[in-house]
Image (tube, helix red, strand yellow):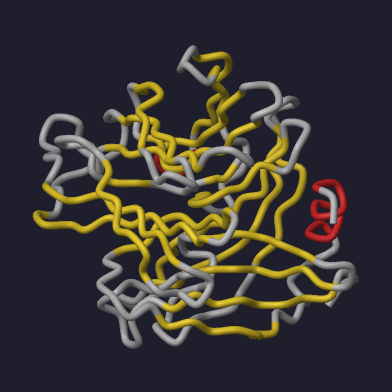
Length: 285
């Protein structure tokens, strides 16, 4: 299916769509807190952050601390077995974000675990698994996608409140405010013509309770025209109690179905991290 057809298939989904679980792969190694998901050749790439010392006062620019941690890029085979654990990041920049495969490289931002801080943009060759630093950004970048044809890199900062465009050597070309407060996009994939398919979460308070509710969803972002083309809630929950679009996300399709690939649970959740695949018909569910 073409990128245009994939976008059309997603835009036909709505809150009534029935997402059927069709595959579950348990990951039997320490996965920590997964962030991004991408498929490249025979491998599955899963970024994750291992927090050793949690950051404090993250929303206070004066009192915030970076904490300590380790960034991981897990390379898996199609059965979910760990092939390689690539350590990524540097110093206070240890938090990988959402990732994208552009046909040549896996792109991954690694930033500080607090908003308005610093990030580095890396690529990983899916054949050699070599890691290359491409450029740095004076903001906490939460995810990135790559348009290899135009040499443009797109991304969103903490909570996706700002969207960026860069050249592939880091020259900033554009920056604009997200017009939507529906959800915070966590992981995205490029879909051609300046468009990205994103998923994410908003954590909302439950009235008269200390509990929180995870609102999940997916969106199509138009970087050229500075608009959100489409958004829909996805209210499916994992065995660990998380909405499935919490972090790692990828979409694929065939002629009849749209497939949602996710890994919402952490390694220390009830059943650990599981790679889950959900299916929805191309027409409205």
